[in-house]
Amino acid sequence: MKVIGLMSGTSCDAIDAALVDIIGEGENMSLKLIKFIEFTWPPDVVRQLFQLFTPNAKAEDISRMNYIVGEIFAEAALEVIKAAQLPKDEVDLIGSYGQVIWHTQNPPTFLVIGEPCVISQRTGITVVSDFQARDVAAHGQGAPLVSYFDFIVFSHPNKNRIIQNIGGIANATVLPAGCTPRDVMAFDTGPGNMLINYVVSKITKGQLLFDADGKFAAQGSVDHVIISEMMKHPFLQRRPPKASGREDFGSEFAEYILHLAQKRGLSDFDIVATVTYFTVQCINDAYRNFIPCPIDEVVLCGGGAYNPVLVKMLKEALSPIPVCKVEDLGLGFSAKAKEAIAFAFLAHETILGRYNNLPSCTGAQERVVLGKITPGRNYLKLCKQIVAESDNN
View (cartoon, rainbow, N blue to C red):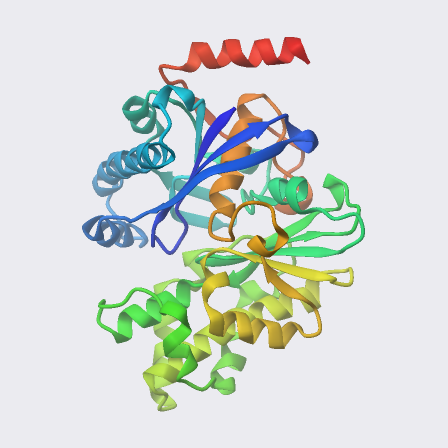
């Protein structure tokens, strides 16, 4: 089955679109990446999205942007099909993570936009979306959701592995050697690139949106007094399962850091170095405080895996534990593509009616089938294909 995964994280830097060919299901699944692209958001849409990340966002703006984001996700899906040089009717399914604009923790709720009906209408392809809602309905946190994919793809018979995603928010999936689904642990460790991006945008007055190659951080020094203050954040003290977002490490917290930095006379470069190290310290502390098994290997994914300064800091903090990127494992896809591929896989499992959450990671009371299905023009053909493959097996 050929499936597209669409992913946009808290940083809103791009929509990741991965077209994969999936054979089999569950623990017997194998996949091949056909094409991966990063589809750039229109700058005016990004500005409008960031206006929705506040408690003052208006319902009319959220409603309007739901359809606009759906259109852009559809464009991303069509673009990856075009880049793969495949006929559109050869693609069976789309898994869309959507764009989270609001998240609360107690009780857990998510507001996700990117209208799936628009994606399905523009592409003609059946869409699975809104993955968080069913896990929350089962009294889970609704995140992290990719831990089942991590279990299927990255489990090792002899190594205790951590799959560390560093997106806007950073999250870890802990895979003990020879684990079963019940043994897997996953949780958000704290901010990933979110604070770095905010600070860089603020000090460059919007000219730059992230610290490319860690160039700003490389020229600064870490202020450990501010780090000690930041590490007092209540989220960092909570035990897993737990999920985070802008409500913890968004603009309000970033402005607090900038205020502290101004009082201590930090340069712009020092501020970026400090928030970069904060991401590392959150990851390191989470491992020491919450992970019960020895760690044999850490595998990085997400955009933060390509920030050499952040990665160097992390390797130094975790030494002598080996730290590598997803592509170093020879699986045929990159650290950047991994999250989009994961949502293609989750959509594939959903359309087959298979459980695809892990209660040990989200805190849900039971395993459930995630997502909502929006039939495309190919839906009847897809159903017949699934039945035929089931009969053959």
